[in-house]
Image 1: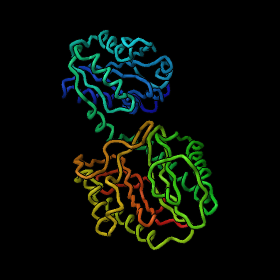
Image 2: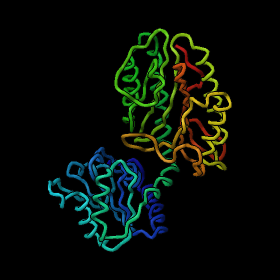
Image 3: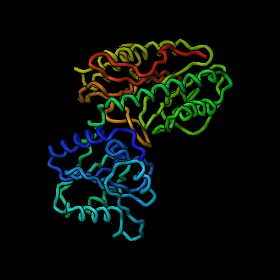
Image 4: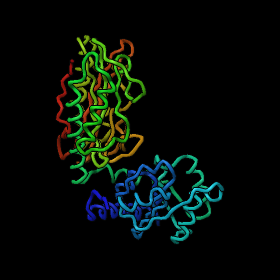
Length: 385
């Protein structure tokens, strides 16, 4: 069995979730988010692209309803108590949601109070509607999507160790690729080197693609298809992350190839000052929204309001495709209190579309009782190649 945490840690996680369920008077939870299943049981799969559900009852028992392709996956990677198979059938009355209802009936949950984790990539809108229809006269249900994210946001010692390893891979990937970043370099070679380094040193594929863009595409902060060769005078934006046991530690940089323009230098100073400023509020006694407000205040006062975004980061941890972004997100008005042992990715993104100049600066932090610790050891200086 390929479990990456101790049985005591899994029991502690389950106990914390059962306590929250008791507060809400829930008899069971239907769990659909793959990251929740991994956190709670170790279950590790990409099979969440099709219907699967982990049932956690208030007595602590776990039952997984999944397809036949994932039975051995669950047996080898998880501590799930009982695994059930739903069969692919054409008839509407045999949908997986209907088969789930049959399982819940066998588990003596008729007439019970059930919390449902709707906010999950593993539960499509269509399946959610079918699920609601199938449970309409079966049980009292409620949206329980916000019970688990706060539990996952505070990392254990083992989780922090995995995140530190991910950060080491983040730094190593960039360090190994840096000599390749110069005029005439192919973006594909840079990406291949960075991802290859992570895998070669025991890491995982990340939950989403590394983002890379040069010239006008340096102003993008999402992955897109298509590669280009760097010009003698160019700019390159990369957002990447090492991943270890699915834990992430992203970083972000904009590099200049050739001579940096005055605008590059100006935006870099703004981004660096904003990032250093948010470190002062990324600590207990503040809320997540304070991080955004601080970043916005610096950027706005330095004249770049029109070029910033409406969020400046998010929590990171064990995540699965399609994205490594986790809860909570860093945006205005988010009142979630900052606590020790959170892992937060803060990114200063300033994209001047008028002058076609990009600038980014971001790294992952571990919150403590006082000042945050940057898990990346890469320098913050503007890199010119």
